[in-house]
Length: 173
Image 1 (cartoon, rainbow, N blue to C red):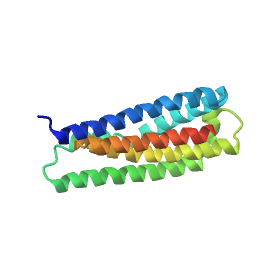
Image 2: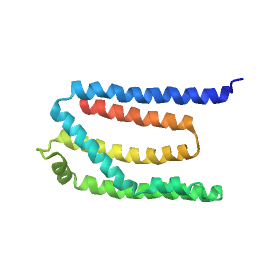
Image 3: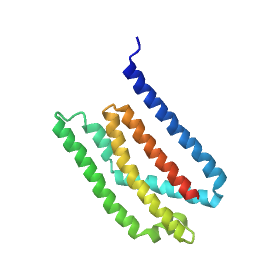
Image 4: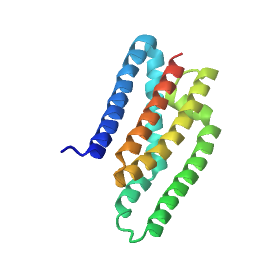
């Protein structure tokens, strides 16, 4: 006999995973067909910058959450660990974003090495918002993974990738 609840969870997760992979497949024609090589280079550099900044902003907190979550004996101590992780990410992201926005001209010149236009500044600000969103969703995804909540994990992952897809489409336009 098939466990219907387990089958439903499997199907929910599978459908969301297929849609996630499909979104990344849809990004490819946008990047290769609609963007000029110079625009694609700017996109690539900004995404690389976002990855580096995210790595520094995470500061190992996500790995700490994964390591320490199961060693906590009570739900109260787990809640304290989770809230401390979110608060730390918030403070680091807030202070780091202020610095990134304050030095946007210098950082953009360093990253792109071209004459900076207002469009580049807008893309940079979108990149900062993407970094912030990415950090908080990454912590939440790790927490959902720890708790074995595949349905919520797949929905949040789908939302995150949909936002990235919209960001890329808006950037391409």
